Image 1 (cartoon, rainbow, N blue to C red):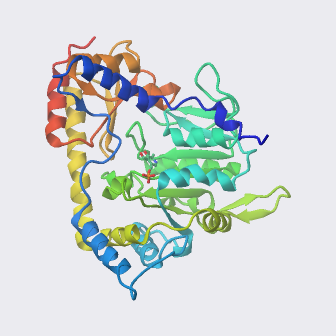
Image 2: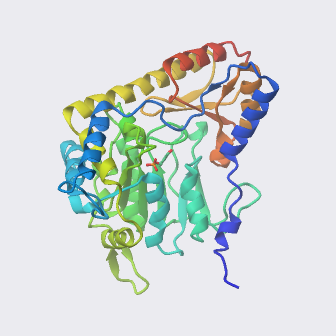
Image 3: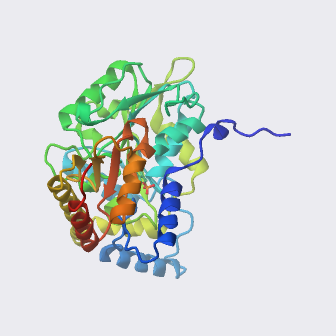
Length: 411
Ligand code: PLP
């Protein structure tokens, strides 16, 4: 009989969001009138902006006529989009990225998950903790994680704690990892690193021959000057870093799907004979073999985001969420909570009161105040004792949430 990939059987059931849903459903059933406010939403809620909608309609018309019909497109994305990305996301920020270093895809989850295809299973991996679970789980699938220990950590992965004790700034690794995942602005903590802090990571990778996988899915939320929009703002990053971007949170494309990955041509890894091989060519080979390109419609919609009108509309939507984030941040502080994030990010990460665990606080908020958030322990062992709220609800619900939290008699 054929064999399965045993690594998949090592993965524990994906517990976090199903357990959240189970507890909320159970509560709603036993309290039918409860007015529950969902502040755990990790998805956007505002509709697509007008510029994208108009471009989508036009692209549908293109597909409806023989002369303008588009079938399979280039696997790495249409040049009309790659040129806009190179110009507006990079050149105008003083960064030179060639269009053939840009790989358009159906999103950052696929790319951060698939990148392991071009990396040896012998590589040792480091992640920040708490972390976007895709980085860990895909390395389990790829056989790089070892076994799950009783402490909730995989034996072969180096965890870099980000907690109040270190100001949510991860220390450089000590176990000499080959591949390091960083995500800034961070999910789930909502924190950022300054350019100077990021430089330490780029320097580390250059010195140790490590690959930096930099997830910038929340780049559009950056408002502060000293926060880098791209890892390539940091000198030397082209030699060590791959950057992942997404239109999901930028422009509400979570449903229509689009992202891109930048693989600079200078970025080299070793083959088993010790030869240096360019990752750009490997990723191109991977994508042209396993991926047939993102939809023409979505790429036209993304192109429209780079017009003046599109940029204005994107900013308006992000500003809407950031206003929610501000309300949450300030409201939580007023109510006596310790919280970070929410300045360059839609996420607020708060310390649970007293000695409450993340799940105890989840139950407490649900039962007492009918507020749903996400327990921090679901993002990794160092997330225990923390809780994530998001800015993706309406102003009104955010305000109501704060009013309720303000009334919380803290333990
Ligand atoms: N990276 C991070 C850190 C995320 O939080 C998310 C989505 O929540 C993604 C990537 C997924 O992005 P996409 O919708 O482009 O697949």
